[in-house]
Amino acid sequence: MSNTTRLAPRQLLALLLCNVAMAGTAPTSSAAETAEPYSPYINTSPQRQVYFGDTHVHTGLSADAGGSGTRLMPEDAYRFARGEEVHSNTGQPVRLHRPYDFFMITDHSDGMGLISDLLEGTANVIEDPSGRAYHEDFNAGGRQAADAMVRLIAQFSQGETPPALRYEPGVPAYRHVWERLVAAAEEFNDPGHFTTFIAYEWTSLVKGNNLHRNVIFRDNADKALKVVPFTSMPPVGSQDPKDLWAWMAAYEDETGGDVTAIPHNGNLSNGMMFPLRDDFEDGKELDAAYAKSRMTWERIYEVTQFKGDGEAHPLLSPDDEFADFETWDFGNLDVSEKKTEAMLPGEYARSGLLRGLQLQQLLGVNPYQFGFEGGTDTHTGLSTPDEENFFSKFKITEPNPERTTHPGKTNPDLGIVGASGAGYNAAGVTAVWADENSRHAIFDAMERRETYATTGPRIALRFFGGWEFKESDAHAPDLATKGYAGGVPMGSELPTAKGASPRFLISALRDPMGANLDRVQVVKGWVSADGEAKEKIYNVAWSDNRTPDKQGRLPGVGNTVDLDGPSWSNSIGAAELSTVWKDPDFDKSEAAFYYLRVLEIPTPRWTAYDAVRYGVKAPKGVPLITQERAYSSPIWYAP
Image 1 (cartoon, one colour):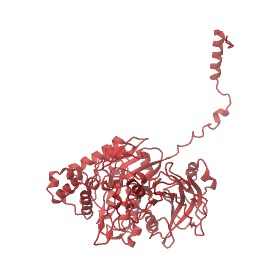
Image 2 (cartoon, rainbow, N blue to C red):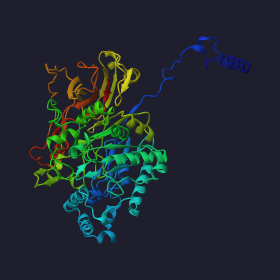
Image 3 (cartoon, rainbow, N blue to C red):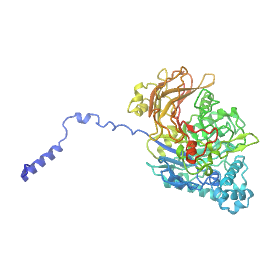
Image 4 (cartoon, one colour):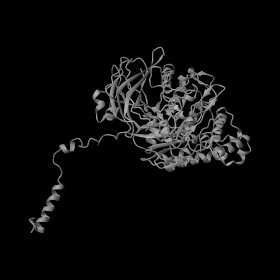
């Protein structure tokens, strides 16, 4: 028998009516109407999130990629980038450890449609002796195709492309390929999950000196299809970046769209990437119009990729113990001219930033006020910057036992020996702090330079500059909120001085699937009153309770790499490093920039994985251990 008290139906109805009446009674206290909302997020904007992507990818539609054996098309590249398994150009199954958030296919502007006709052997191609030779060589595959690709690049680099092979706007095949690239970007664009961009690479080569730019559209097909890419072959195109900027301005004026350009591989420009004079106008001094245009159209720079790292050079920065990292300094792109030390300041990002400060003193505008980003520049359609999953740049250097010894470009007459297969750098990745994962939000982050580059790992990096940050801010759970409220993020200019020295709020969090962090460094560059460019590296946060020496140098973090695995251990290093750093050498009369370089603990390089997986010995001098890193966009100070 139940002990539950039963209510009569009339009693139950009365109780229900009472409850309803009580629930509908409004609070009588006026405090409820005037108090702040209980939820702390009612009047705040959502925090920007970090998104990772590749801004520089080639498929079989690029002549040099398709000619050397790449058969993966844009659709394959997108499927791979969003996490699907595909088969490589050599038939190997391959998949990413984790998908990208955003992705850009940047097939070459010059020669769109050419490689398809060369492979097929269309009548207009076969009638030309060079076209027939390329048709035979490219279809032969292997080393013969790779050699033909080098020959094609050299011919294009020197402006000697035969008329029959000059595929440019006006050629039906050219427009067809552009429409295919645009359609693929539209098909795979999935805002919030996987964002794709309409893009291409403007392929300027001045007698073999690399001046390439990736041109990125904020827009959809309705605007992008009103144009075709600007090329570098006169008379339709031009090798002069100023003409590219004019094309970009015309596009925006005519369509109401938005477009930006990202230069890369200054290390193969033989000094032309960051000039002090105009190489296209007989060495005329640069003027304010040039500076303003370049700063407007080129907001970020690709600082690391497969063809070497471009942050710094050991000859330019002899006091920087980490400057000699994945260095390519043998010559220009087609090895037609040997590198000289005098060329180096016009090639590297750090020296380019310094030249920008010097030109600002003269012109009133800084042409080289750029942020940092990274891309792979893969020519296989496979973006694989992870060391243990590296499919390299071309089909012939996809995983195989001989790829580390694959010879690079050479010019015996000039004594140039280019990078071998082992010289390719498994890098890089672009990180953006954006409001959401969409075209407009990611593009806007690039425009405001709130970006950074990594050599592959997905390190979460925050960098704010201000005048009043406190030590406790570095350990606050709302560090980013304090950063935006009390200063400016990476890529910005410091506000007017409010103190004796600027303070920087810094936070670096390791890749959750990667290695611990060794240290965080601030790289400072400045120009004295007499125009002399200077730089200094500061260790500002580090792991394992190490003590700097009198010069500020830290002992090494150690090395846990086991080359027999290969493997490493996170028993050294730190998962997170954060601090507030004050510039101890600040002079308010001197223009300056500051950026972060974050180093991981040592880990195996891709060559170490090859040695174990194929049971081969790495060639002498080939590095087997690396220290992956990240580079924040700078923060600038102007007197």
